[in-house]
Amino acid sequence: MLTGNNVIKKCFCDDKKPYIFISYAHRDSRAVLGIIDRLVKSGYNVWWDEGIDPGTEWDENIAAHVMDCSYFVAFISKNYIDSKNCKDELNYSRDLDNNQLLVYLENVELPRGMAMRMNRIQSIFWCNYKNPEDAFDKLFAAKGIEVAMLPKEAPAGQSTAGVQTTQAMAAPAGSNTPPAPSFNQGMNPGAAPGFNTAANPAYNQATPAFNQGINPTYTRDLVLSVVLIGFTLFYGLIPLFLTLGANTCWKNSDREGYQKKSKAARIALIIGFVIVISEIIVLIYQGATKG
Image (cartoon, rainbow, N blue to C red; front, side, top):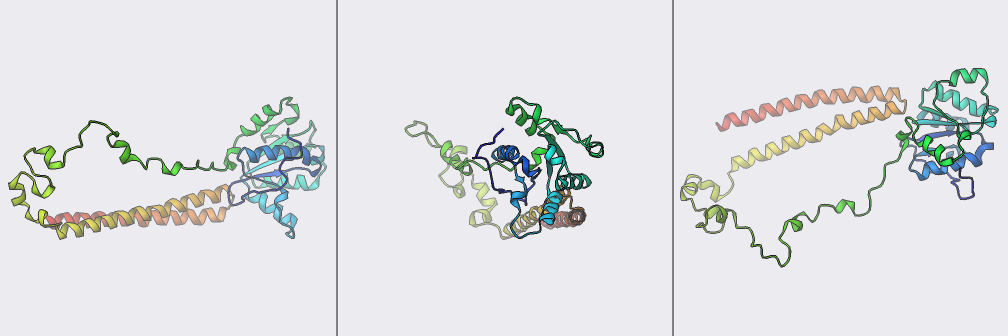
């Protein structure tokens, strides 16, 4: 267990993302901060009472963070059991039906009432591990704790992958491989270079408008089709984001927000279905008018 002077002292939790709420007795700070330090360095988003801004209402701030947390970890010890505030946090988290984990820093016997309420919560008896790394492995494997893992940043330069596709397909420098022939030269060796001078005169005579320029009707239909498809794809993102938002509200126990966003997502899906049907009718009409 890390208990040195270099462990984390300040809370830098991003409470807009899923986070772990740490419930502990201040008398156990030395041991608990060492575990928090390891959690943070392992990529977890962690909040404890060092994240309370000066001047804010303490109880109100604690209650709000217990309510919004995605995972609740209580460090059980004699000091914890003797603390009314700690037991209030634990009971409030249980009432909210948060994902909970009990980490026993000491072999202590819970009061009967507390033992009855907490006997089904997953637990880690940290005090029984001789090797701290085994205890950390158990902690990182706890069910549900991965919800508070922050996404890893992409390595520098990763976004440039694949930019050199064209160069990679080109013949290596000094290669004797001849360049690929033009389209008409490859199909008909007797044809002159250039698409509009294809070797088949019958093709050019049959479709003079093609060589003179793009057909205006074709351009109009192409633009309309692209606009319709683009609008459909863009609109399809709306119910997706609403559904993701509803899922976040569910994880954060925001029942009212979950219901509102779920309803909005369903309405958006119905509207999207109507739009798709309308676009299919337009495309069918375009085909009928061409025929």
